[in-house]
Length: 166
Image (tube, rainbow, N blue to C red; front, side, top):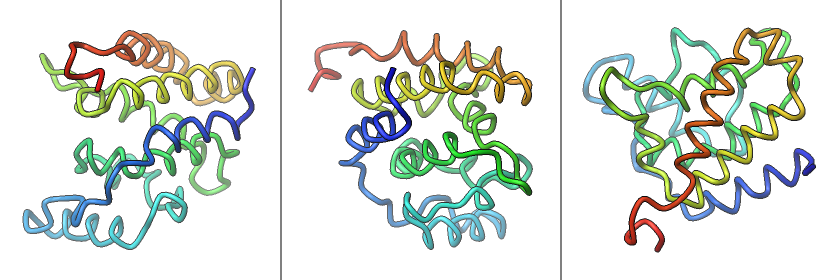
């Protein structure tokens, strides 16, 4: 079984080509979007902190498209593999929300926007969390959501058509 560093290496390699967007949200939409954009523009994947993204009621990633989410994904994977923060808890449960959320009748927007290699890296991260953090998933009540995420991202890890395999 790979260790945390190996899984993070796979994630970093898969997302290495993700370019940093000029803006992460529709900053002109409202004050909240502007504040979220400002926060995310002040971070890179290595400096993203759990305090930046752990509050489900004030999560800037809810407003970020697959490009911005992919850019930050190595940092999000790092946070999910970190020990629970005394103030903010375990980030893994919030990451699962982003990886499984789909409005009625739609697909997960990040799943649709990621390449097959990126989907494989997400699947590897999820399987690693399952293998190494079962107590946390039970404690945080997200075991079922993790199983759903593994099924979803594993099934989607293969190319959908010839254009996807580039």
